Every structure is written in C-alpha cells, then in structure tokens.
Length: 262
Image 1 (cartoon, one colour):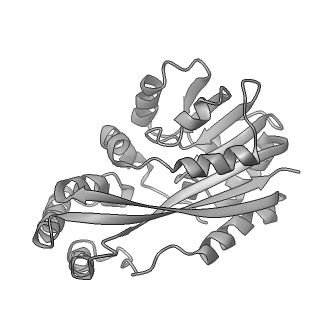
Image 2: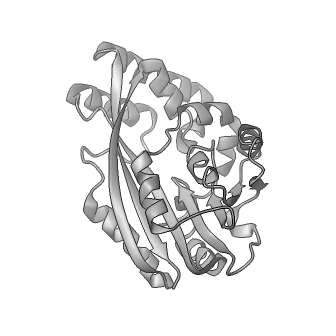
Image 3: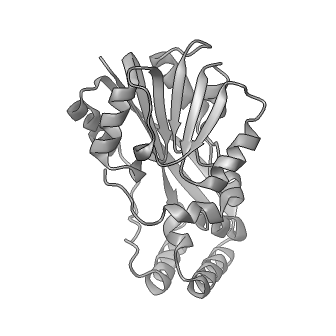
C-alpha cells in the first residue's frame, strides 16, 4: 500500500459533511475485533486517522484509554466536541508518521479507511513498535461499489467521469474480493506480526442524487478538482441519478485485517 501525497489539506474544508456522510462500520466487525483482543479500563489504544469519528464509539465504550491521531485540524476539533463526555478519550492533531508514541505500550492500534495515507513500511513498523507483546493491530477499510444494480446509471456516471475527471481511473464493475483482502492481510507478516486473520463484511446504502454528490464531495481527490469544473461535474452526476430512478445504491465491502505482535 502506498501513501497518498498532497491531498491531506482537503479534509479541513469538509469536516461537517465528512462526519455526516461517511459511513460507520458493522457491529459484526467490532465483535471480531473484541474476540481477537479484549479491551477494558486498564488498556491503551490508538486510532490512526479518526476522521469524523465513524469508528470510535465502540472502542470508547470498552472503557479503554483511547488516543486518536488526526492530521485535519477541523476533524480533530469536531471529534473533541463529539466525544467530550468520554474522559478516556483524547485527540492529537498531527500526522501519524510525525507523532511520538511510547514503545511497547498499546493493547490495540487500529485504523478505519485511513491507513492507506501512510507509507507501508513506516506505518507497519511504527505500529509494531507501539504495541506491547500480544497487542493487536486492526486495519479496516470500506470499498464502495456504486450502482451495481443499475448498469445504465453506472455507465452514464463513468462517461461523466471521463469528461470532467479524465485522470481518474475508471471504476471497474467488480466488487472487492476475498483474494484481495487476503493479500493485504498478509502484508503484516513482513513486519513481524503473527496470528493474522481477515474477514469481509457487506452492506448497502441508498442515496438521493444530492446526497450522493455530497458524499463524493468528502473525497480528497474530488475536493481538489477546480471549483467550476467540480460544480458542473456534480451537477451532471445529479442529473444522471435523477434520470435513472432518482436514487443510487452503493454496495459496500469492508475488509478487516487483524494481526498480533508476538
């Protein structure tokens, strides 16, 4: 996994929309994490890239001492307010790569659809050093597949991308696979992790045309499009959705990777 460079600033511009439109994660995913590593008031955890706090509350409710790291000042501010009732919560505004954490301290380090921002070797090596022996790393990410059930709409949206965002790699008509999840999960072996497990979870989300464009407006590469072009781009996508039924269904596949420090 390679790091994404140059677009980190974008999330400061859409903090409230990010919190509203980015999805949370299935209960079954957290059940698998908690079966893999038990958390309680004596435990210490770090969330890498808290975003809008979509993956935070289930961890906080275990009572563990949770420190979140987030590069966006606005998202950090949002989450400080969102979780202010939890004395076991704190957030640091910085890049994970540049933040000093105590070695051999943490029971859990986890990241939800954020670890791809970090260079592979830097991320895995740092997490490994932070964890105590027996500590767990949980990385999970959402892989959306829009309009799987509506081929004409899917193809029309791809045409719009081709016109207004030609540098974007075309979306393939294929869901994220078990094979892909297994390959990513195995990366942890290179960095000394053991007891590696993975799983896939599925769900659907339905959006109106305006809601879907609001969701697209929280993605860093879409935010970076020149403003007038982006406005026309989103307008055409809204028109396409309204012309093909008035709503769009997104089929999500979430992959969970678990790995343990021996």
